[in-house]
Amino acid sequence: MASPVDALLTSVTFADATHGWAVGHDASILATTDGGDTWTLQNFQPDLGKPLFDVLFLDPQNGLAVGAYGLMLATSDGGQTWAQVAANPVTGEERHFNALARLGDGSLMVVGEAGLIGLSSDRGQTWTKVTSPYESSLFCVIAAGEKGALIGGLRGNSFFTGDVAAASWTKVNTGTDQSLFGMAALPGDRVAMVGLNATLLIFDTAGKTRQVPITDRLGNKQTDTLSWVLPTRDGNVLVVGDASVQ
Image (cartoon, rainbow, N blue to C red; front, side):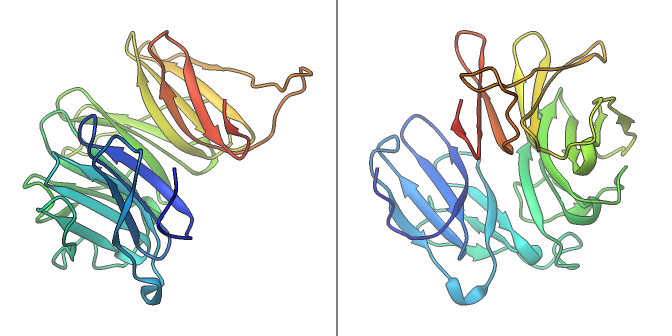
């Protein structure tokens, strides 16, 4: 698959089986309408000096992309046009936005630098800041239940809440000080987390966290950074990072 841009890409999302988007440095936004076989360039602003770190589409027409220094772009026409979201309490401090999630009740959540957490109840048009349980960077978030979320960040810090707006967080005992960059929900109410030093954790609702060692073909423990994790249909997980896909 050829890319129409020579820039580091950081995140990808699909609204359905055929419509997908990828974002990256130089405020690049790529789109596909054939399930990823071909890609076209929708946005490219190298002079802006702001990379995009995550993208989320609610349906094939409405999406958001977020990145460095408070950059938040929105589209309502499938990415044919992108515009900056109006200034709000979340974008005002120009913190880096690292990850987006759609909660169970349809609200949108963004996490980022300096413990930033933002919440939107109108599909990303307006945002409010939520009290954070952590003052350093948050890199990943997934929805939990109707209004809750699980977040992860620097030095193995992870927190859970059943209601993001209420901002009552419980610290998760990850058993590691390695920074966490990606999360994915697994069958059986479990969550996989990945991060620095080939960290792969499996967390369950009973509060237990199990670290899964990742080795090479010779049985040596890997130390590559893992940036994302995805569940497979057969109950395993795919991890993505410096050592490609495993």
